[in-house]
Length: 286
Image 1 (cartoon, rainbow, N blue to C red):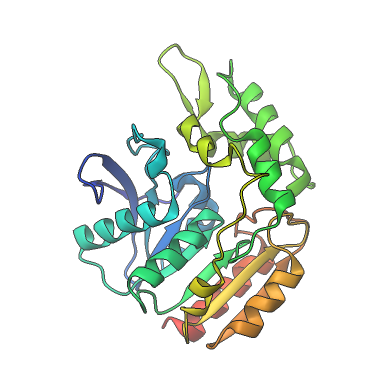
Image 2 (image 1 turned 30 degrees about the vertical axis):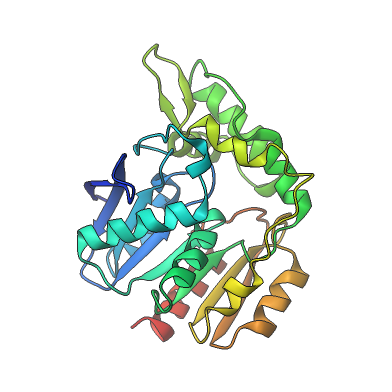
């Protein structure tokens, strides 16, 4: 695994201690933001390919990984995470990083741009957009916050496969064990659990009854920012129709790539994803 430095920093509200990895390459900085139930380890496969050319800043959002849990679950939302990201960038004295956002991480990127336009010179969205399919949201709502402790890594891997198997149909046992190592952690009694606060599920309690917020204005606020969108071929969260509308409404350079045999969301080490990411960064984030 590629080496990184650890950073501990205060959340925007000042009440929590948050964690971030810093793969200190010599190139320009990239802020990598994970999805709802993931953490900074989610980008380990991609970091193996990018860390030498870019400085990768990879945080655990509040309530995930090594970051503190928030005693108020109402703070588990993109605008709060966005403020935390500005606090992280300020602490590291980084201005104008590129961004890669997986799922929720892409929503955070949109929120950050809305708060401070032109924050990012280029953004890569991984299987997410301003409109999310109800089918995918319902699926996420069916498992987030669930699951107790696992007896061992084998049991944890089986749980990861049960949740994500449809999105990664070609994965073998070794892949699910690696997945479990990135998404689970040991607890004091020696067992294992998912490395996130179960209270993040509170936002999905009434997902079937509450209309989604209209995020299309945030998408249009990207203006001329160069954008790459990666969509899993099997994704149940980002539809082809929404992806096409994103392209139609994007004022700046836009690239789109469908990653075969992947649902929500690609790990970004797939050949098609890697080629697209590297090409996009060379063209728009020199």
